[in-house]
Amino acid sequence: MNEGRALGLGLSAVLLWSTVATAFKLTLAQFTPIQMLTVACIVSALALLAICCWQGKRQLIVPTLIANPGYYLLLGLINPLAYYLILFKAYDLLPASQAQAINYSWAITLTLMAALFLGQKIRVQDWIACVLSYFGVVVIATKGDVLGLQFDSPLGVGLALISTLLWAGYWILNTKNKADPVVGVLLGFVIAIPFAIAISLYEGAAWNAITASGWAAVTYVGLFEMGITFVLWLSALKNTHNTARISNLIFVSPFVSLILLATIIDEQIHPTTLIGLVLIITGLVIQQFKRKRSKLAAEKA
Image (cartoon, rainbow, N blue to C red; front, top):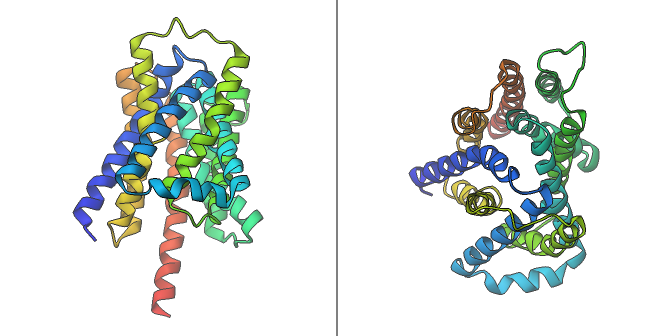
């Protein structure tokens, strides 16, 4: 184990993930959500294929798919196809600061879905975390008008919440996946690409008006939201004895993201977005505290 290397890799992943909300908005200025998904999937697949070759895992790709084709088809349709298409549409309809903050509640959604589909017990701390986090979502979506429940884009808020269901569902399905994680993610992108191309052709969106900056932005999304950053994060977790310390770095990401949105694309960050985000993060921290305490109790026993 190399704790310094793990910390460096973890910070690199978190900082890269902090930039993607800005990159999403820059890309969506020129691409439709399905165009963006199509190109980003191709870029991600190429990046992950290169990583698999570099790590000596190329020979695992085809046997892994053949061993369970239906399973990987389902995973690919959920993520990246449905998840990112819905997420990109939410970013298209909402300010990026709102969309990324609401999407950040996926960990709370995961807790509820794990209880439903995996039979995991929901403890008191989990319920507190759920109430805080989803109240934070309402604060963000209504810009503080909690009682009035007036949304700038009800569809955008709904899509952002649906994306958390898809992401949580994807990871629940992945609990049964014994394959190499990088190979598994690569197969998801490979499977999604033909479906994304077909949908983009059906949509009939124009490609000739996209500028060089647009192509650069979508390439960045493919590399650093969907591809390389995932491998950096896995590598960070592999190189540490203290998984909790590395995992907690992710709490920095949404706040850095807000700074970048305000600085790079001049997005006005509504004060209630920050308040709601703090509520969501507080809920996530409460969950982490519960897990740490349970782990310590188990070790003492």
